[in-house]
Structures are given as C-alpha cells and as structure tokens.
Image 1 (tube, rainbow over the protein chains, first blue to last red):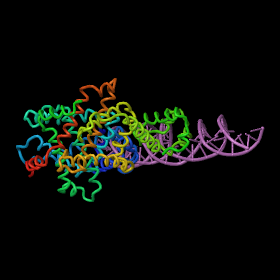
Image 2 (image 1 turned 30 degrees about the horizontal axis):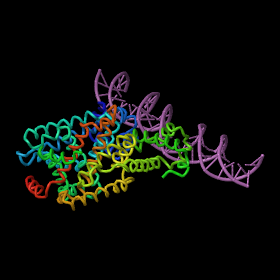
Image 3 (image 1 turned 135 degrees about the horizontal axis):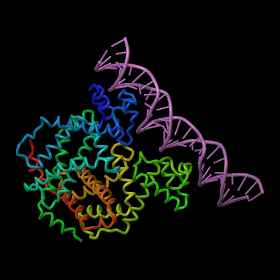
Image 4 (image 1 turned 120 degrees about the vertical axis):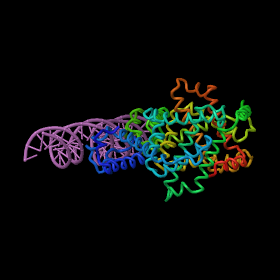
Length: 225
Length: 225
DNA sequence: AGGTCATATGACCAGCAGGTCACATTATAG
DNA sequence: CTATAATGTGACCTGCTGGTCATATGACCT
C-alpha cells in the first residue's frame, strides 16, 4: 500500500501519477515497467516517488484498489434487466456489463489483466491469493446453479470455475486486443457483430456445462479405449 | 536463425547451450532473459555467444525449430488407436498425445508457451504469423468437421478456432503449472484423476460446439432483450 | 616450417535499472 | 518572525544489461 504522503496529495497530482503508472504497466507489464519513466511522465521527481511508494509493485497494488473502486462505482447503478434470470443469463449479463467497464477503461484493464493473468501465471504466487478470491465468488455462483439444476452435476465445480474463468479472461483479452485496433472501441464493442460473437461464445460454454449426465456418460463410453 | 558456426559445434556443446537457453526462457520469458546468464550456464564466453547467434531472439527461434523437430519425432510413431475417429475424438487424441509430449519436455514447453502466448499476446506482432500458421491447421480441421455435420454450422469457424485454441492453451498451461508442483509429473499426468479432468473439459467444449442450430436459436431467444 | 582461417575469449563500453540521500523548498505552529 | 516539521528534488550510487572488439588459440594446408 502507498504511504500516507501519497494520499495527502492533491487529487490532480495523484491522478497524474496513476495515469502514468497505468500507461506504463499497460505497455510494459510489471517486471519491465520503469520507475524512471513513470516519474518522468507524471512530472514528479525520483525522490518523491519513493516518498509515495515502496516500489513499483506498491504502485501496482494501488492500481488494484483503484480498479476495485471504479468497478463498484460503475456497477452501482447497473442492475440486471430481469429479476428472474437463471445463472447463465446472469453470467452473460455480468460478462457483458464487465466488458462495458473494460471498454470504458481499456488501459487500466489491460495493465491489470496483463500483470495478473499473463505475467502472474508464471512468476508465481505473488497474486495467487487475489486470483483465488475472485474464483471463490464464481464457485459460489456455480454451486447455486447446480442446486437449481442449471449445471450438469457431472461437471465438477473446480472445473466449471476454471472454464468460466478461462472464458472470462479470454473474452476480456479479445476485447482489449481487438478493440484497441478500432478507432471507436466503444462503438465496436456495442456493435451487433461483436455482441453476437460474445453471445455465441457464451452459448457454446453454456451448452457444454448444461448437458445432462446421461449425455456425458454415453459420450465418454464412445472414446474409452 | 543461428549462424553456421553454431551448427558446426559438437553436439554436446550445442545441447548444453540449448539447455541453458531453455532454462532461462522458461524462468524469465524472452524480454527478461539475460544473455549473460545463458552464457554462464552454458560455459561459453560472451564473444562466442554472438558468434553463434544474432541476439537472444535468435536463440529463441532456434528453440522453436528444436521443439518442432522433437515434436515430429515424438509423433512419428504415434498413431490414433482407431482409424475411424470423428473430429472431436481426433482432437481429444491430439490434445492428450500433445500433453504426453509436454510432460516429457516440461521446461521446453513452458519456455515456448510462455513467450508465444503470455508475452506474445501483448508485445505484439513478432510471432503473430507463427500463431496464425497453427490456427490455419485447426481451421481446416473444423471446416471438415462441419462438412461431416459434427460441428454446429451456427458456430462460425473463427470462433471455433478461438475456442479450440483457448482450450488447447489453457489445458497446456494447467498441466505445466500444476504438473511442476508434483514430484512425478509423468505419473500425475497419466493418473486417472488428471485424465478425467482433461476429458471432462474437452467434453464440455465438444458439447458446446456440437449442439444443433435449432437449440442455439431457441436459446438465443430466451435472453434477447 | 610458415601461413591461413575458423573459432574462442573476456575486458570493456554505453545505457538504463532500482534505489538513496544531503539538501532545498514550503507549510504549519507558536 | 522564528522554529519545526513535512514535502520535494535530482545528482549520485551500484549492478546489470545487450553488445563489441582486439587478441589468443589451434586445426589444417602447402
């Protein structure tokens, strides 16, 4: 966590620093990020930087709390259109609303997903607990869905979590990577074509998870050697 | 591509260099790999390194051709157990046999997938053509599957490629990451539990892609706002 | 023997990294 | 106005990076 001096700063200055950090992490990831460049681009001195933060990971930690705040703020006045959604409808709504957020903050999203899911996969357990936490929420959702008979009980929960996580990340990465090439990313995301693509993707996932156990068993027998 | 001098080297020496490079890239990726460390660990001098390679990317290029050779060698005497498999059975066989290979060369696999799929997603188009090439093969496979009526025609081909690629990578990453924690990775991969997990994952994918168009449409209507 | 050519070496270079610190500036309090 | 505490600064440090190059070694040929 950043030191107190950082939070004493005028908002404008803080935002400039955060913005420079977002740019840096989005372009270079965490390991290759340069404190010197962050310092240059935020118009503060090297000494000040170390008066605000422990090191660059500390800056990244702050970005995590920034995105958390912005996300709760964004979701505050967003509500599912229909109160009686099943789990998959709810997941679909979550993904799509999440994509709206990502599109609104593409660099912030890129910075965080790059560090957490690309670098973090390999250089280890620094953010493992963080990923665990988000997995727990998904897990609960799936357990509920099973109770409601929406998810095939032969699909074990860990697996379903992995599947939904994988797709959530894949779609997010796809949106950011492809979207950055468009001139108007927001328009592109909301276009019928893009929405249809996401829809179809989620349906493929949904149908996979929905299938009944009997189908799974008969299919499993097919390829047993 | 490495220079001629490299290929003139005695095999033993070459292997030591390749091995050091694999270790380095597996642990640090491409951008953070250190030529100095590679040089130290392979017992050659700095000057020799630059007589063999242009730079570290050149070394990585060589690793790509190494894995290609090893893979064709590995697959040479592997044949699908049943000549009359459908596309999904074939894909499943490919994935599983591929996992055997990955397990046999975990560091090489980690080095390459880390650079191509984790770093490569962000710092751009250096290896884009390479990923394209492997996507083309998948694409052809899926088109054939559609002709045979095995894949739902409402699933567009690009999407199916993305889905199969995503899973192929996700499973590979899962095997490497989890497998590295085991004392006997080969035993772990071949265990009934791990195999079942992969099986279930692939079935979820398969069922998603297999569903008929009519199912998709009726399901799509369900959530149309 | 002398000569030639591929190979091997490590000291050396400039550049940038993360991080420190003595000092300058500004704000607050008495 | 003075004393004190908080904040700001950039020159400077060490360590590592990718990369070069003059020089040394030794295999092969005539």
